[in-house]
Image (cartoon, rainbow, N blue to C red; front, side):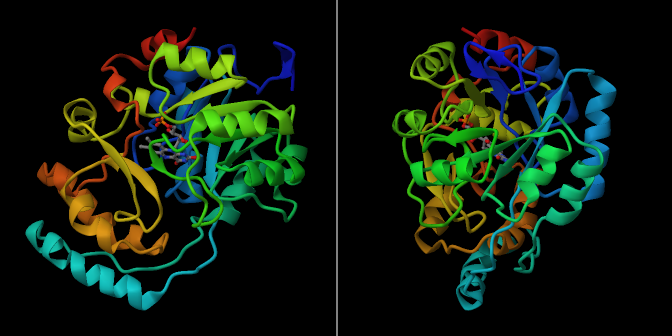
Length: 339
Ligand SMILES: Cc1cc2nc3c(=O)[nH]c(=O)nc-3n(C[C@H](O)[C@H](O)[C@H](O)COP(=O)(O)O)c2cc1C
């Protein structure tokens, strides 16, 4: 890793801006390539993809840019779900499924094809690998580093940060409470911490680059977080409305027509921040902690809602800065966010 501003830098970054990996469709190869060409660090979102799909996704980005970019993987969670609670929750969703004329998915645990994706990245390394939902201590980090990748680990608490540094992380992705979509926490009980607090707690612990994420959607917010000691600002929601983003049109529209986000387990069984809608209001009170089981149950319902033009049953993931998200080319958004 090379040095700038007196601190180690991540490869592929001319600007202090990192694009959030956004699994589930928002992060297209066009988005990653546009961000990378603009001089920020782009991330392919490997979550929910098979290893084979990930390989194709990486190829598609390489066809569009020669700039370096990273890949983000979901670290598997242990299967800790109470299957009866998941079944009971699924029963309560039946009227929504009926309304959309779709069958709910079967609850199941999976590891998101973790081992095969790691294998792929060891055989064909990228400059940066991001890990979220946990931090492996089985030699995977060292193996990725030996293959030539810098490893960045998402942390949401001071304890996770200290543990990630001890595990050998080259950089920390600090995810504040304000962040859109899933919490990257390593355990279900980790309470969301506001980004400024998290940064103040973690900065004294380590010299590794700190990538700060959560609610950063205009240049003033970016300037403030960099002044507070972040090495980079990571932005997700701010890019969701760009033409390169694969977010459904209703999701793009909702970012500026709806107000108010909340953290809920209702859609996937794992805490995530989204715009408040009917599904959250109806099912938030009954939510169960069961990821990825509930994700698999609601997936067809969410897809059917998007197809039917029903924003009340879609997961409208959004960070707290959603109202500032611009409908502009990704490169323009990156330039506008750069102090
Ligand atoms: C639609 C969406 C999907 C996301 N998917 C991922 C993901 O696949 N992996 C990941 O590490 N973080 C994911 N995140 C969270 C981001 O890494 C980051 O924490 C967040 O975008 C920062 O907050 P902001 O959206 O307010 O900018 C996602 C965020 C959004 C909005």
